[in-house]
Amino acid sequence: MTFPRVAAAIFVLVLMSSLVLLSVIWLSPLLAHGTNVQTAHGTIKTIGPGRDFDFETAPGKILHFQCMNTCRASLDHMQRHLAEHAPTDVYFIYDTNHRLVALDVD
Image 1 (tube, rainbow, N blue to C red):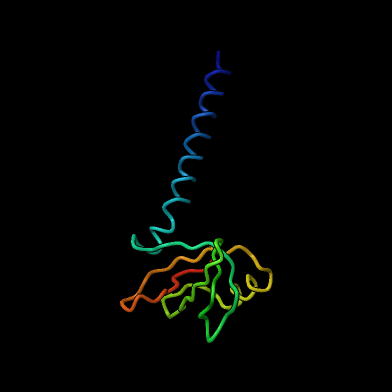
Image 2 (image 1 turned 45 degrees about the horizontal axis):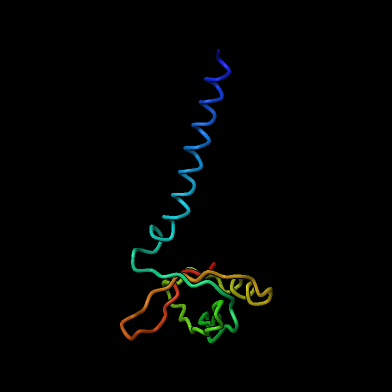
């Protein structure tokens, strides 16, 4: 009689844990950067000057991002992504002059 209750309790705990984990993964960019942030997925093509970089999206479009003081990206991390041609996510906003301003590079 106790086995079904224990199994049900474990199932409920696993279900709740997975729902919490999924919600944190989904909400973390919004919580970290705000609601007007957009995301681009692709690879870094060039870096410089400074931490500014050119980025190629999956359809082959090249975007130039400025990585200013608000950018939480490490230059070493970006250089590793460049050297390894690693898939990269860029969280960005448009500034008042419609330039792409990177907030985070992962």
